[in-house]
Length: 309
Image 1 (cartoon, rainbow, N blue to C red):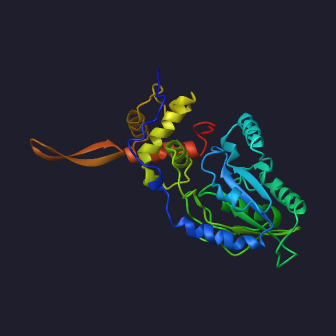
Image 2: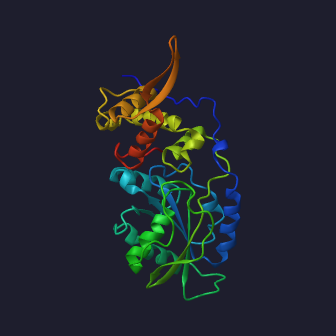
């Protein structure tokens, strides 16, 4: 079967999806930088290049910088090696793949030693408190910044949540007070709000961000994100969705796929229709439920390991 080779943007603009209030977050981050020893940037491993805010490299590069590609369980080990090679070509070598939802995961245990190594290799400037390392955790929305902080607390302090966690972008609204994540060595972190690049001109980049859940779904449209996901899965010949939803075959028609998902899961909507004998109540597939289900399955890894970049 022949699949689409390009995705139809339907005339939509990407920039309307990005809130302007994030500029306040940028100012707050810069204001805290003076007392920070190291910047840890968290990003989604499925989009290792797309959507990374250049602010984190350009403005915060006065401090040692560690890149954590989180949700690494959602991509293959082979893809991890390829990504490391691609980043090395850009002179980015301080990179760790993490899975912060598994709070005892070995990858999270690498973070504190890596941070200490970076701090010790760089001179410490403008410090008010020399006894406590201060680390700023930055990144775009919904990539796992708060999950990282909570995982570090669990591993190093055997304590629970120090920062709110959720599957919805924008849980952290402001630069918080310092959160202790380790006693030996003493390390505290600043959890910061997710900050997008002010302007993203490439539609495909915006759709990748939306597919990974870094933008509120309703701003783009669940059906449109689901259609882009279907386009990507077919393009990379990943047909696990066919088996997962018991489809008769792979399809390039999102409405056909969503209809099948809704019927397969017994989800319908009541609608009123006007006929020659008056109004009658009919049942139709719940396409919105199906689109959200399709996206949830991808984001949780049920549709296979996929790198969007």
